[in-house]
Structures are given as structure tokens and as C-alpha cells.
Image (cartoon, rainbow, N blue to C red; front, side):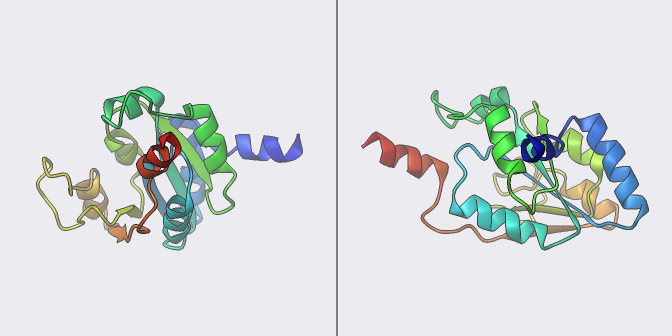
Length: 171
């Protein structure tokens, strides 16, 4: 149970996360934030998250709640795994320091509270996009940039997506 307990300590409520991050920031730790559904963890996710972790000292992963995933329009059968399962799998990655669930459509409220030093998204986003209605817009970029942080984009691993895995399984 020791290892499971350690994983569960990485999964925090927004308020508990803020307490942890405030303490870490006081020791000049650079906080990196990214978010997603992470429904069926695959090579693309692991590579993306590991590269995100390399951009700072503390990697925080914002995880869409089940209701939030459903509103993303990914299909009636999504998420495949519930948020508890997805959070535990993410926490199992050694380079993920904290996992925090959010119920909104975007992680904007979390980003406003956390104010990460680095905000990361996948290569299908554009850090220079300023139109909030564009699919390439990175939510929270303005907050991070205003606070002297930076916004980074990491290339996606071609051939890996949860949607394509589900389609393969259905064949």
C-alpha cells in the first residue's frame, strides 16, 4: 500500500494543490502546467508529458473531469476510463508531480489560480494565436505571459491518439 499511497498523494484538489505550489514556489521551483483528457494513456501522451516535465521543476497535469470530457464532443463512449482511473495512471508516471481535476470546459480557472511559469500544449495549438475563438488558441496564455511566464508547444507523436486506438479496437 506504500506505493499506492504515494500515488494518491499526487492527486490533489485545487485548494490542496495551491498550498503545495505556494510552498514550492517560495523555494523558487518552476511550475509547468498542461492539461487534457488522457483517456487511454499511450506513447504520445507519455512523450508529451515527459517533455513537458523537462521545461521546469514541477509538472502539474490538469485532468478534465468525466463531464468535461463528454462536453468535448469526442463521442458518447468517452471517456473510456473514469477520472479516478485516469488520475491514478497519470500519477503513476514518475515525472508527473501533481494531478488536479477540473470540471469546466477549459482549465482557465485553474491557470488563473496556479499562474504557472510555463504553460504547455500539443503541436496542434499555436502559442502566438490571440483569437480565443480559434481552435489553435491556448487557454490561459494571456495570464501566463502577463506574469512573465512562457507558453510552449510540443510536437505530437504521429500515429498515436486515443480516438485512433478506440477505432482500431472496434474493428
